[in-house]
Length: 590
Image 1 (tube, rainbow, N blue to C red):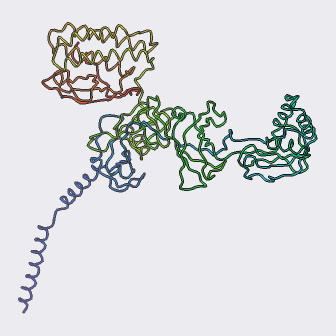
Image 2: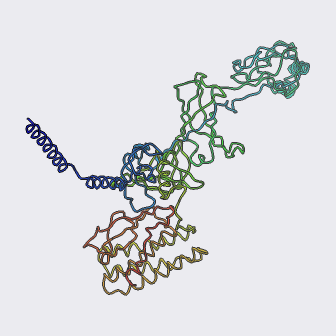
C-alpha cells in the first residue's frame, strides 16, 4: 500500500514538471515582447498628424484640429506644394469644409446694370402759381383744401377789387367811342386781359353795360392744389400767391448716382424701377437729364427720368428702387467679378484664382486693379483674364490659411519688381518687345538669316527709346537692361551657326524678360515660357506673345517642348518671387 502511494506521488510530480517545461518552451520571451512594444512605439512616434486646413498644426497622434475641429490626417498626405509661393494648395476635404465656390469670369456685357435709389417728384415745369393780378378782398372760396383736383378754367375764388371797378368803367366809356378812338378801346380791353380776365368775362361786362363789383379767379391749368394761402375775408395785393397747382399727369423720377457710377450713365439709358406702395409692379422710363453738379454733402449727382403717370398711380415723394441699363462706355475694364470675390487691404485688392489642371485644389493669390462698382459686381481694370476661374466664396479662408502656413497672403505680400514709368516710355519699350518677337519667331522657323535680319528692327526700336523719360532707379535699371540687350544683339548678329545664335538669344530673352517685369509693356497678355532641355538640360526662358508653346531653342525638332511659367497681364505689377530666372549668361559662359 505504501509503495502504491509513493508511485502515485512520483507520477504527479513528474506530470507537474513536464507541464512546466512545456509551458516555458511555448511562452514568448520577455525580451521579445519588449522588442515588439518598442517597435510599435517607435512607429507611432514617426507619424505626425496635421490639419489640411491649418498645416501649422503638428500632433503626434490622430484626433481633431484644435482650431477648426476637422479630423487630422497624416502629414505625409498633405500637398507637397507647387513651388509657386503665391499658390496655396488644399485637400478636397479642406475645400469642402471652407465652403469654397469658384466662378469663371467673363467680359463685361455691352450693357451693364446700376442699382440706384431715389424718389418721385412732381415735374417742375408743370407747377403753376395762381397769383392776384390786382389788389382786393376774398369774398368766396371754391377750393378750400390742399389736394383738391381742379381743371383749367375752374373757379377758385371770388374777389372784390376797387381797382377792377375802375378798369371796368374805363372799358364801358371806351366802348361808347370805339369807332372814333379804337386805340383807347383796345387799351382798356388789354388792361383787363393782363389781369387774366377771359374774353367771355370781358364780353359780359360790355354787353351788360354794368360794372361788376366781384370777379371770379379761374385756374390756369388742370392739376392738384398743393398749397392754399388765402381764406375768406383776406385782403390780397398784386402779385401775391393765392394757390399752387401742379399737374401730376407727368412726373419726374429723381435718383442719386455716386461719382463712380456717373461715367456709365448717359441720357437715353433705360430705367426699370419699383415703388414700395405698388408691390409687384415695374415701371419703365429713360434718363432725360444728368445733373452736372455734385451734392457736396452726399457726393452724389441727381439723375432724372420722366414718366407719364397714367391712372395717377404714382405720387410725389414715393421712394424708388431703380435699375439702369448702361452702355459699356470708354472704360478700359473688360471683366467683372462678384463683390464677394475681392479682399481689400488699404489700396490693395486681391482675388484668388483657381490653378487649372492642378493635381490638387490650388489657388493663386492675384492682385487686381478695381474699376467702378456695378451693383454687386466690380469692374476689373487689370490683373485677370476672361475665362479664368476665381474664388467667389471662401477667399478669406484661403488667405488666412496661407498666412498661417507662412506663405504669401493679403497681409504678407512679396515685394514688387515693377517700377513706375510714363505711358510714353512703356509704349516705346512695347515696340522693342514686338521687334524681339520677330527675332524669336524666325528662330522657331529655324531661319538664322531671317532672324539676324530682324535684329535691325530691334536696333531701330531701341534707338527710339527716350531714356530721359525714366529717372533715378528706373533710369539706372533701364541702362543696365539696355546694355545687356545690345551686347546680346551684337553677338547674335555675328553668329555663324543657328545653335550659337540661340545661345545669345537666351541672353537677349533674359533682358527682355527683365524689361517686361520691371516696367511692363502695353500688351494685354504675354507669357514667360521655359524649356528644361535647352543647352544640354540647363534650361532657358523666353518671352512669347502666344499661349501655345513654340520653342525657339529647338525649332521644328522639338517645337512644343516647354511650358508657361508665368503670365504677364497689362497693368499688373510683377512680384519679386524666388522663381526669378537666373542670368543665362553665367549659365552659358557668355
